[in-house]
Image (tube, rainbow, N blue to C red; front, side):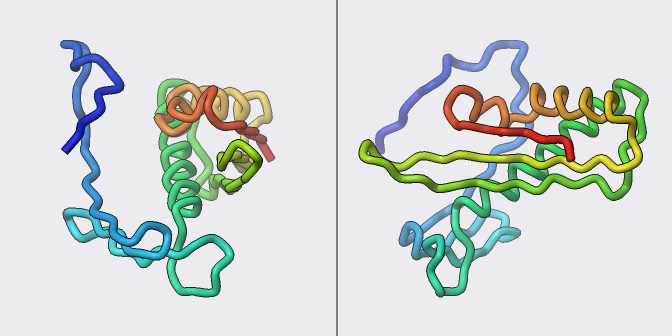
Length: 147
């Protein structure tokens, strides 16, 4: 087994919060199951008529959920109550060109009832805090819109 290390060993300031463990077989036409059994999904190629989800949908779901939680952290620091009907509609495109495949994304954030300036500050803070946003920054073309 080859292990790639993309980051130096943990520093004393780092604290591991969680490790997701998922076993996937068959690629885009396979299945994925988490070690705790909470995730157990059939996978299918985007646009296929087969039952199952695809990696882009899973990525969009994870990113949007994480983004909402990141905004909640910012709201707590700002002493602002997030609206109960807050939402993020995430769109993740799988794109191909001559050099290969890549992702492109849009996050449409809804924070009804908040003043636009406050809502935008929460969106901006969420983008800086969310691990998905941090992981994709500079690697994926992303547009975040407050709707």
